[in-house]
Image (cartoon, rainbow, N blue to C red):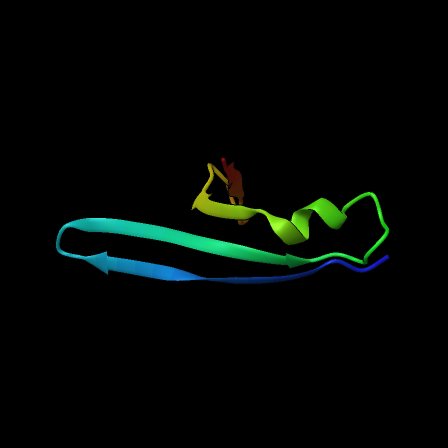
Length: 61
């Protein structure tokens, strides 16, 4: 099964510090256990990755 993720957002490394926020949009197959992802709003912030990329995703209620 494939779940497509489009993660669009803002990255700013300016004078006021590092700012990173995105809003991932999921496209999961209809009828699958992950179909619920298609109908929710998420936000994404950077996690604490040591040598790798880490993202924390939250569903907005």
